Amino acid sequence: MHVKILDDRVVARAKARGLDAVVYAPHFVRLPRIRERAASFSDDELLVIPAREVFTGTWRRRRHVLALGLDDPVPDFITLEAALDEFERQEATVLAPHPDLLNVSVGAAELREFPDAFDAAETYNAKALPHQNRQAQAVARDTNVPAFGSSYAHLRRTVGEAWTEFEDPVDDESDLVSLLRSAAPRRVVHRSGVGHRLTGLAEFAHLGYENSWGKLDRLFLSGMEPTHPDHIAYRGRFDDANAY
Image 1 (cartoon, rainbow, N blue to C red):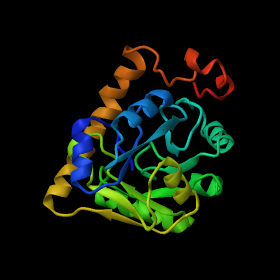
Image 2 (cartoon, rainbow, N blue to C red):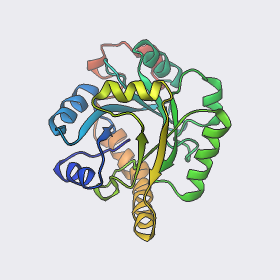
Image 3 (tube, one colour):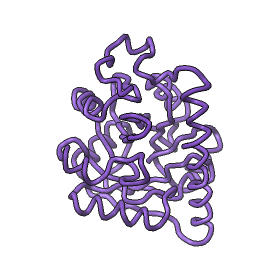
Image 4 (cartoon, helix red, strand yellow):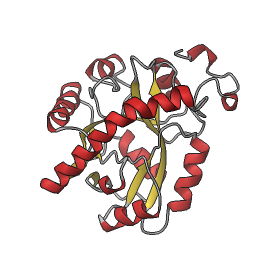
């Protein structure tokens, strides 16, 4: 909870690491496509749960929000307030990934400003550096928000480096949504050792590409993203919330 990539190798690795479920939330992919792909890779051994990590705000003031249990698509590049209102309308579960990480994250300020909007905050992210994870833990502790952990895998080898253990089983999407919304008991777990740190550093290095050339290509060279609020798929529903 959560991964950005999904293929046979990811599924095999998740199973080998003993995971029962993964949350699949790729960047700039609309919800129907995410749901379709998640269903095609789910089986009796591994549940793939669809989700959206919505990029709210402008490029200079991005705030990433992870939403599970959505029924209707929500675009990127709308205001944080509009995204949270839409999540509330859909009764979605709302999480704060990598809080206070660089300039892309919801932090303590937003968690205090919207105290009823977030169901959990990430306290361990395999992509983050140790001091960044300590800061995330402090954010969750100081705002009294339940925790979760994830590999945040953009690279296949990161799958299963960090995870969240619940006392109750997760047999379908609604189970996980309910556990998160109810602040059910859970434990954030991660691997350790040199291999784990090297994998984390490789992921962090990938962050540099993702937030430079990767985003430049998507935003300016590849045309309109399918999750842009001006896309025809949203039929103008989010025109007033467009952050650009």
